[in-house]
Image: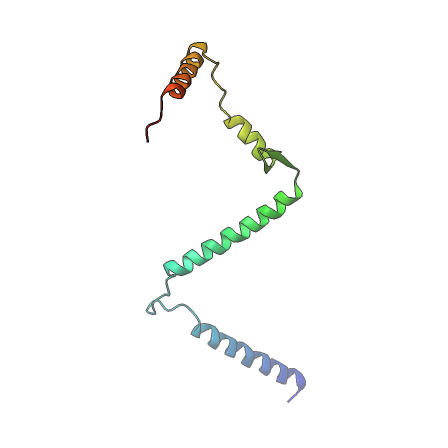
Length: 113
């Protein structure tokens, strides 16, 4: 037996063994599939959210921050807060006078305890 014959025989046997193992591991429709449980799905979702939060935190720490009302925010968050800000109504002098009158009347009342 020559070396090339031996090698051809070895390769053929190896291919046959590989073919046998692949047929055993194929999907069998009669076997029940393992469905993911709610807990495993929740764990995967939490892990994914944590990874995304860590990536976002890494990005945000490298960007320029602004301080608004004692809170550090990114420029994008500051712009969004500025767009959401509601403009104050103009001062109504009659309402201001009414509030001052109520304050005076409350001061004049005696407390009974």
